Image (cartoon, rainbow, N blue to C red; front, side, top):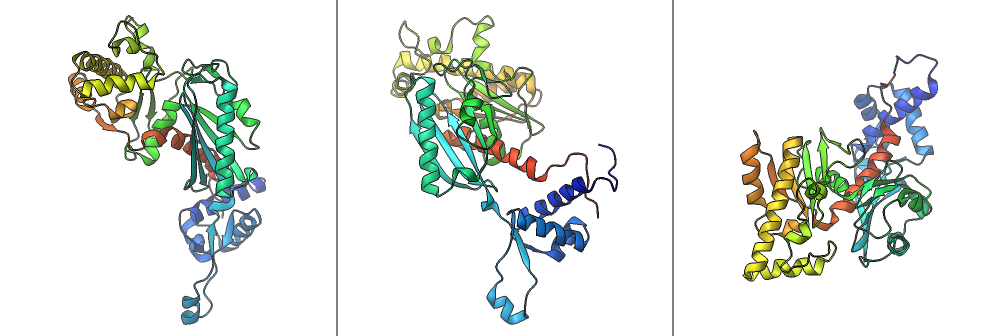
Length: 384
C-alpha cells in the first residue's frame, strides 16, 4: 500500500480504531492517558476513537473501584474491551460425533455440546444433529444466534476455499457437499470450513502442546490418517487443499491398506468401525499374538508415513492425536525412525487437547477471522 495522505480520512479512522482496540484488548482496562502512551496517538484522537468504539458496542467504561475512589478522590475513567460484545462457534463434524464450542471475542470458551451420530448417517441427518447441538448450546449459554460474529467448522476430507468438500470418503454423502453453503443457512455471519487435521494443528499451536513452535506437523491418526501442518505459524493447505493426506500413501506402491494391516482375520476392518479397532488394541494388550502383530504392523506403517511427511516439511515438532494418541509404543518407534533420516529430528509429543482438538481449531479459525476484521489494516500505520 502506498503512503496515506490527508485524503484518506475514513481509512485513517479505521487504522486508529484498530490500534486503540488492540491496546484495550491486551489489558484488563486502561485510562485515556495509558492508551495514549501505548499507541503513540494524540489524546484528542484517542478520545474520539474510544467514543466511537463505545457507540459500536466494542468498548465500555470500566466500573471504578469504590475504595480507590474514596482514598484518592475521583479516579481517571477506565475503559475495557467488551469481549462479550459478540460470540464465536467452533464446530466439529466427524464420523461418530458432532461437537460445538462457544466462546466470547477473546476466545474464552463459555460452553460446549457434543452429540453422537451413526457412522452411516446420511449428510442431512448428520447436519441436523449438528444444528440441534448448536441450538442446545446457545440456549443453555443464554446467547442469541444474532450475537455470533463467525463460525468455524472442521470435517474430514479435502475442502475447497468456498467450503465445498471436494473429496470426503469418511462420511456418507460428503464428497461434493456444499458444506459451507449448507451451514450458512443456519447463521447470519461468516462460516469458515476447514479439514479436521488442519484445524487440530491450529488448535495445538494455540492451546495445546505446540504453543512454542511455529513449524509443526499434527497427525490425526486413524485407519485413514490425516495430517495438518503449520509452517512459520501459518496453516499450509497446499495448492489443492490436500496437503497432509497421508492416508492415501498406500496408493503409491503400498497396496496393503491400514485397515488390512490392523486386521486379525482374512478380512480388512471397516475404516470407521471404532469398536473393531478397540477390540484389536484390547486383545493386543492382553497378550494375543495375532492382535499384537497387527498393532505392530499398523504402528510401523503410521511411523513410516509420518516420517515421510516430516522429511518433506522439516518441522520442529510432530504432534500425535486421534485415537492413535492412546496407543502404547507409538512415540518411541517414531522418534527412532525420525532420528535415522532427519538431520535435526523433530520433537515428538502426544496431543494435549484430545478429542477437543478439532473443534478448538475450528474456533480459532473463527477467532482469526474476527480479529482480521477488527484489527488488521494491512500496510498501514497509525496516524497522529
